[in-house]
Image (cartoon, rainbow, N blue to C red; front, side):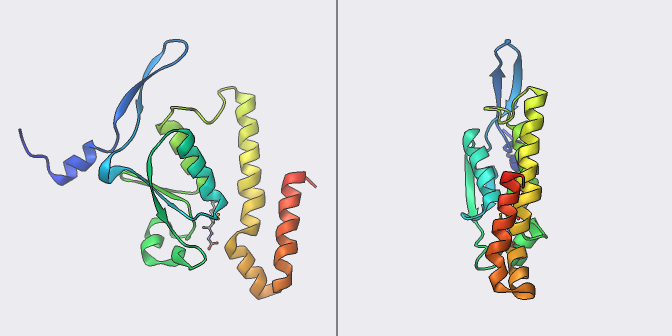
Length: 178
Ligand SMILES: N[C@@H](CCC(=O)N[C@@H](CS)C(=O)NCC(=O)O)C(=O)O
């Protein structure tokens, strides 16, 4: 048998393919899990709510992944190695073979489509829209307003005393719709 080149080996071992049978007996091929070098990699920080979303999604889908910590308190998001993956310097970042995806919403949607086992979204359109609405309120109207970089800016340019009231105001507004 011909010995495969490294490049060929990587290309062919990106994912295994499995068969999923739905309730209506439709059969479809699904990507299951990559192995070895090509296992999913998640760049994450334990206190990051955006990374939590992806850890939860990966676990609900039963996908194994390699956890790569990026310590935001130590400024590891600004390292040249990490900035090559995500120039804006935010976690999470997911690496799946050749794919490098940042931003939790994009990662979530990618996982949902590529690994359809244990779906995270309802198939009903109205319910799905409600899920998108809730996800977007959190990821556009709450979290970015009290991100580490924003709080640092407020601390330095406004006042350290403004940090907590600012955070509280935006979290409450988002959750209570005030
Ligand atoms: N929209 C992005 C936001 C990512 C984000 O803000 N990540 C935070 C942690 S939750 C971060 O890495 N902050 C680093 C910093 O502010 O320097 C997402 O949903 O992934």
